Structures are given as C-alpha cells and as structure tokens.
Length: 97
Image (cartoon, rainbow, N blue to C red):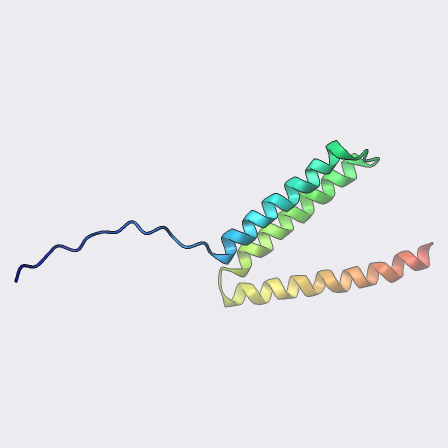
C-alpha cells in the first residue's frame, strides 16, 4: 500500500463571536455618526465626543474580555463601576434640577 501525502485543505476560518461583536460595533458607531447627516444636531462637539469615548470604551472592553480570565474580571469590574456611576448620576441630576 502506498502512503499518500496529506493534502492541505484550505478550510475557511470560522466566524468567532469576537468578530461578530467587532462588526456589530463598527456598524453601530457608523450608524450613530450617520445621524449627523439625517438629524440636525445642536451640540455637535459633545455628540462627537460621546461617540469617540463610547466607541473607544466598547472596543477596548470587548477585546480585553476575550484576552483571558483575568481580563474578564477587569471588564466586569469596569462595567459594574459604569453601572454604579450611571445610577449615581440619575439621582444627582434629579437633585440638581
């Protein structure tokens, strides 16, 4: 019996959840940027700053999450801090009005 050399198959790499979430983020923030053209936004500088900060935070936390178990804990801690800060701001802004 002859030994046949192993054939190399070019199988496409599977789509990972990281790829899907990165693609989702790109479309999400491009969609937010496109609202500048559709709607008359009064505070353009603040809106662009919001998009810049939120997109940077989104992609940073997303890619850190998939680095390993320690980074997942860091992401959970940051998300918890953001949630607590958001709750604090709800009451703070209500009292200030």
